[in-house]
Length: 65
Image (tube, rainbow, N blue to C red; front, side, top):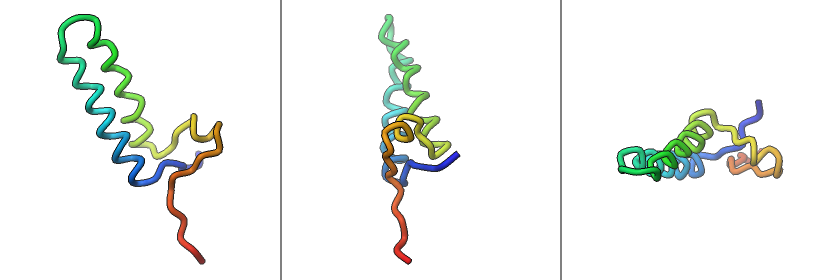
């Protein structure tokens, strides 16, 4: 598994994930959308995004040799 999610990207994914998960506290059917927050949280935790792999995107910073 090749890592392709950088530090800034992980931070944004974490905040987005928690924001979506907060919808679980809302009444009605909109709360089920909050479960989508698990996706950015999981990709931030693991450091790999399958969609980025398909698109050839890598947001990690590389150190110059």
